[in-house]
Every structure is written in structure tokens, then in C-alpha cells.
Image 1: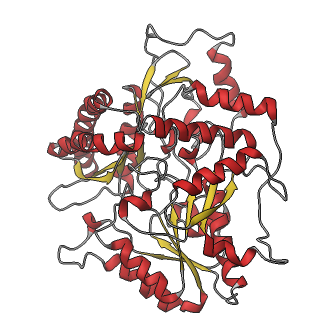
Image 2 (image 1 turned 60 degrees about the horizontal axis):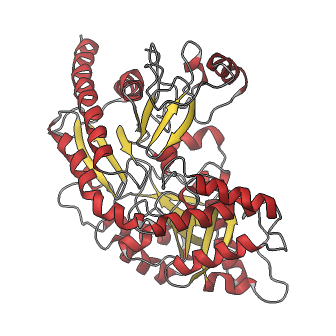
Length: 494
């Protein structure tokens, strides 16, 4: 089999486990109808014209590009009719599942009424209605909604808003942002500064100045006697080192994606909130992934009981049926910009696009009507138990996460928690796991931008049937991976 292709040139694993089987499986009875254009045309054109994101393009020189043509519920189908369990919700975002025609119908109705108008000095009904709906759902005084086109734009906007807010309050020196090691906050230059992944940052340096990184909450790698809130206290140490008068914001995910679903310790966010208040620093909850039911609440901060000054969101706000994001800010953040000639001098052409807002409203209707937050909370224990059952495998070191956002950390030695080196990780993830999981019909994420992990984030409608399918694929593949790595390490030493 050819090497899996969804990896980037820095050597970091890409967003989904994929590869090309030597021969496609026979189409199932519910496979999509044959299209007028032959799949061979797609392969040729994709290789010639399509520049894929976070992808080693050379991996497809002698292998097919995975072409997904249809989705239905928790499943997607490729150009050959083969079905895959979408264990990543495409990219943590198709929360209500694939094939929900009511979202497309909402977009079509809006297109007939008003295909587009900008939110620059104007408003339109759908952006007004969606902003109001979000404000009603968001915790505390988060009543001001600034729309963007996606997650990176939301993070970029939140940092700019934090700077502008402090400037308007007479503290223009406050420009720095504190985030965590291995955290992923986006790819635009400001969001990349907040991102704590060196392999993503280094090719584009120098970055926007002002970023500082502190320890994350991966207690699996902590000493046993470590204070459980030491990672929170590290934020205070960073603020004091940088100088409180220069720090604008702290940005944290409720459950950290980069590194593999790091959950906070009890009291972590309460301590961070106290620290931010003590030094006049804003707290941004980056919920591009963790909002709209992903961890069992409309907003991830609700699960862990903290009140941020801003929330950044995207992905699940439309279940990715349209491109939309937002910064949800507290009334106190908006206050300096509401009088006289004051202005937040920032925006995007397509932020709050009418059709995207219509889709988001329909998406929220589905989440509420089907009570998907409750569904996640009721079923997360079974999903977690499914993954915990894999701990008997020698390669499974840790299982962690919250809601429908879970990760398995892979280790070389379970007793010592020894991880794989770069060469071993390359062989493990790209040489075997990524392609084999895809071949067997499971789309998930393999990543080694921290220690090697397999990450799962199924649609919120998933249940027992899908969990059993995940286990039936993961168990034999991870068992084989463990055996292969043992043999590979022996040959390498020889």
C-alpha cells in the first residue's frame, strides 16, 4: 500500500487517517449512483489541479487521492461506492451528521430571498436572528456576536479585539497573548502565534509578536506528586514574567485538541479565571471544536464551569454545511466601541453571510430538537468504555477526552510510558496505521505533533452501533501495529 497522504511536509501527521487500498471494495447496495464523469477523471484532475491542505502531495504520485462523494448520517462514501465510518466528523465539525437536507433547503430559501449582503455598516435579517439566538444560548453576559468565516478568523479577531479593547480602556501596551504548548489555534499569522506546535510555526517565522506558551494539562506525562493546578499557576508565572501591563489575553480550549484531547484538572479553569481577573487579562475560550454539543454542551466552558470574556467558535455552528465562525464577546468587551466615533476597525467580507447564517439557524434547530447535547452526555460513557477496552493492547498507553472528543495515546512501553522516536512514529502512523484504518473503513485522525495519538470525534448522532464498529476496526489494527513496531524496533537495533 502507498503511504497515507494526509500529512504535511514538516513530518506532522495530518488531519485524517487515509490512504489508498490496492483495490477498491465492491460497491454496497446503498452505494451512490455512477456519476457521468468517470472517477479516473477526478484522480487525474485532482493530481493536476487540486492543492490539498496539510498534505504531502508527493504521496499521491503513485496512489489514488481519496475522493469522498456522498455522506449519510455517520457515514461517507468514496468514488468507488465504498462506505466509511466518519469517526472524525470530517474535521470535528459535521456535528448533526451527513445528508441533512433541511440545511441545504434553508440555504436555498435564503438564496432566493437575499443571496448576499455585507455586515459592514449594514445588517440583514439572518445575521440579526443568529446573533440573537447565539446570545440567548451563550453563558453570562456574552451578548455581542462578531461573525467570521471560520476558526482561524475567529481566533485572529478575538486577539485583535482584546488588543483594541485594552487600547480603548487606556492600556495600549497590552498586546501579548498566552496559550499552551501543543495547542492548535489556527493558521493565519496571529492565530499561528498562539498555536503551540513548532512544526507549524517555524516555516512561517517571523510571526506576529507577542505570543507566550505555557504548560498544558496532559497529566499522563506529569510526575505523580505534581500539584494538580500547577499548569494553571504557570499562566500566572508567564503573566508576571512578561509584565501584566503588556498581556492582553489568555486563550485556552476547554479540551485541548493538539496533543490529543487534554482535559483540564478539577479547578483548573476556576484558577485561570482568578488569575486573569487579578491582572486585568481577558480570558478567551477557544471553542472552534468544543462548542455546539461536541462535549455535551452548547459551549464547552459550560461543561467545566467557567465564564470567559470571549468565545471563539466555528465548525459545528453550521455542522460545516456552510463556512461560518464567530467571536462571542461579553457586554463589557463591546462597551468601549458603542459610543461616539469609537470603532473596532476589523472585518471580513463574508463574515455573517446570509446563507451561512440561515444554515446555522437550521443547524441549531436540529441540535435542540434532537437534544444532541443530552445524547452526547448519555452516550459518552459507552464511547469511552469502548476505547478503554483497548487498554489491554501493549501499544495503548492512555485514553482521554470528553464527550464525543476522545484520543488514544500510543506508547512504545506501557510501563515506562516511553514514546516512539521520530523514525518509529513515521513508520507507525504513516507506514501503517493511517492507511490501514482507512482501508478497513474508519476515518479518524493519527497525529504525532505531540506524542503519537489516534483521535476520534464522531458525529453527535453516533451511538452503540458506531462504537462497536470503531472497536472492531481499531482493535485488530492496533494489535497489528504493536506487533509490527516490536519487529521494526528489533530490526532497527540489529
